[in-house]
Amino acid sequence: MEKEIISSDFNKVFSDLTTTVEGFDYKEYNEVPFDGSWTPAQVTQHVILASEGFVKVLNAEVKDTERAIDEKKSQIKAIFLDYGIKMKSPDFILPELKEYDKEKHLSKIANIHDGIKKAINDLDLSKTCLSFELPNLGQLTRLEAIYFVTYHTERHIHQLKEIHRFQKSA
Image 1: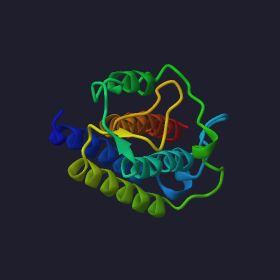
Image 2 (image 1 turned 90 degrees about the horizontal axis):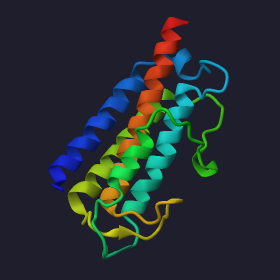
Image 3 (image 1 turned 30 degrees about the horizontal axis):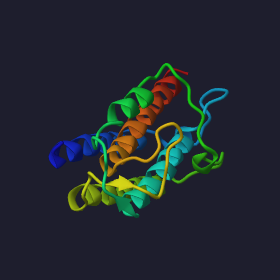
């Protein structure tokens, strides 16, 4: 898979994330829209926590890959883009219920974007990442890790847009 395509897919999603977060006013951003929901700020914090971790994973120890470098990509996509299933966040990326600063979040999103964009451009995406293993999926290649971030973020953009629609109609 060509780096231009990977970069384009990633850039589109992170641009959409930025635009979506910018669409919330301060009050809406930190407001629980309905029982059982995270605030938009918590959703964004969750994306930040997960994505920051992957910036580190991409730049950590790797090894040669002994399988197709995109073998798990379609499975990752199927998991995250099935909006009919509800998922539970692992504790280490579970966002606190508190007030978050939208501008700080946007700055962190930009830093994550830059870090992953640099990884796409500078690193060998065929290598397998050794510093993190996903339950049921195991170790990912750098390519799969980038798509994990892309599809995970896309899932939460969908969630943010649904919250925004709900807030506007309430």
